[in-house]
Length: 451
Image (tube, rainbow, N blue to C red; front, side, top):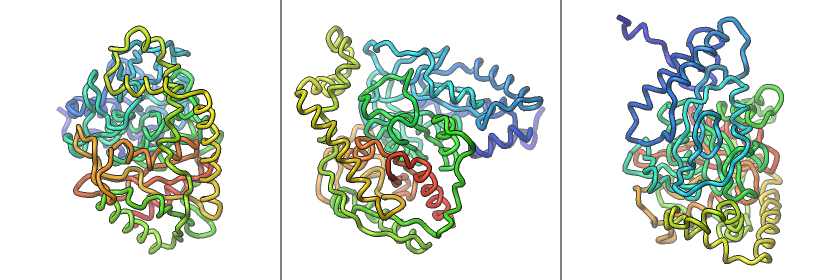
């Protein structure tokens, strides 16, 4: 009988797992078996939408043989990864957390998923999510709530709730998520993991259910910034190795913080944690300056684009409106209220907001602000107490997450503190197309936090 010492050591990060597979010190089968054990152990968190354990193990055995005799397929060879249940995965159903019928989604496997496979990843499972990706709390009347791994009484964040929670508890080394207004970054913040929303269009969404096509993004959720960089290089089909993450060459980064934009927008505990974080960055050599972020109300500017959601789900809205949860149905129906002029004005605002963010960044490496105004609230919470008073939770979140999504610029969330045992993340925002810069800066921050 195997003893405790005979059991394989399971590496803690994607990079370490991939290296162990290449070196022959850990097998893909052991990695999948560990992930499956965690699925069973953490079943109550409700992170998984679909799992084919036999298929995952069969793929792991093939990849194990290849790791011994070649060829190595790529940087994710033998590493189990999960996928949010709005991306098509061949051999797995796509439900998108919905009860309503979905529109046709082609091709039958999303391009981003194919890229993961070609790099050697094992698609372990599909993760639960908020209904049709419309929401930010991770609660779903059809599939059940995804629960926060730090405290199941609290929200996991949405809409990539299962992806963030699964990654946090070790069900796979990363997950493919989507972000339209914060749906990668918010659950990453609430669950204490890294979430990267790249530049708009950097990762293909072909083969994924759309929500607002002009704002939808795909990106990785991982445990470290280096792992996010590895997944992003695969997902975006960037040639060569991930960028050198640690060497700035010319010293520490230059940061800007939009303090006026953040005034009254945080809970007191997150404010205190963020100010302490900024002071710590300055103590290790970074420069931090205030900057004006004159972008108005990004959440309101975003609303006319809901007309795109109507176009995605119009057939089901017309024939089976009762198949949507009431809150989702009402949000979709509001898309009918906007005129063509309002929609075109919103499209114009997208360009203006990107330009405003670029102006704020012209003398800095990155703009910093919290990924969420609060730590994960109790499930069912709809209002939180900010420094400025009571505020609708969704509106408070969108104030921080919507600008980067609306403008389509890169935004990385990584955990920087805990308040009463619950994590909170910071956003690292860079200009459009400067995805590697966001990862580079985020890795510097990650290293600074442990020194």
